[in-house]
Length: 119
Image (cartoon, rainbow, N blue to C red; front, side, top):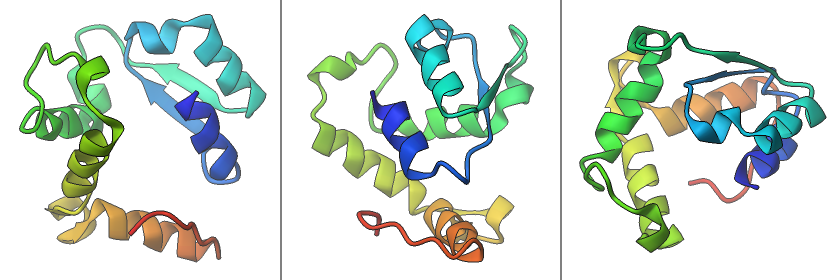
């Protein structure tokens, strides 16, 4: 499971997770992953997109590459990774017009962590 790998890689950095009410977050397997890694998880209220603004922002950007109702089972991991890296490479006002990726790397450097595989 992808989330299990992310939590294992960044075990000391992720302490909470804010989720929407999608079935992937309500599944018992996902909740076991949260519990395994001692992550507190919070669900946004229904019809409250303001409670998950960065998620909505990212989804909007992802729709530029994959329109609504895209079956991601037919999208290669490479294509998805290219889209995600392109989105994460965009400057954002929230991060002082730096990219999400550079903000993430900066956060890791504060904790003296280095991750391979991200550019």
